[in-house]
Length: 154
Image (cartoon, rainbow, N blue to C red; front, side, top):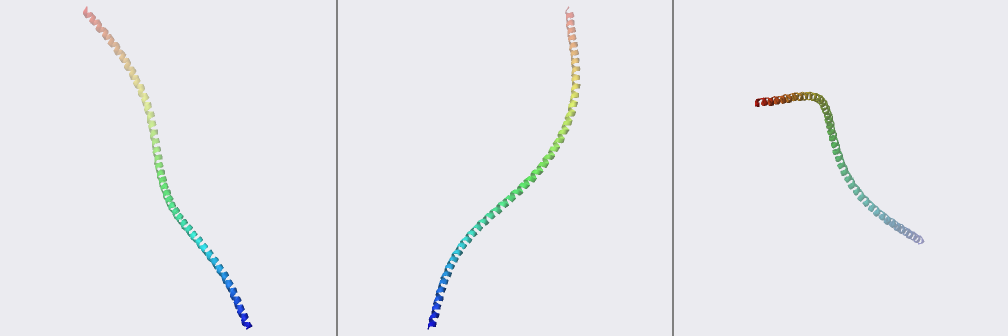
């Protein structure tokens, strides 16, 4: 019987050790469950952050798409301006050539005008001389008329 008592005692002691171990395991499990819940909360927070980041990324992608469109529009405008500038430069070259031609023609006209001016001045001088001669002859004719009238009255 002693043998049985000792076996029972050992069994009871084993049971008590197992109960202690089970309680310790249950405490560890509860701690693990708390850690898991905390991890789940962290994961949910991370998922929220990821969703927010995905929204931010979508917004950035939309902004990038808009910026690309604006850059394309700027490039198109730049090419159009470069074409306009080229046309303006060609027009300026043409205007410069026309101004040169006009200057040459103006120089020729000034020379011809000066020659014509000298010619006209000479003609006016001759006309003045002729006019003076006419005035002189007219005055002599009036003098002769007055003289003839005076003779006729006598």
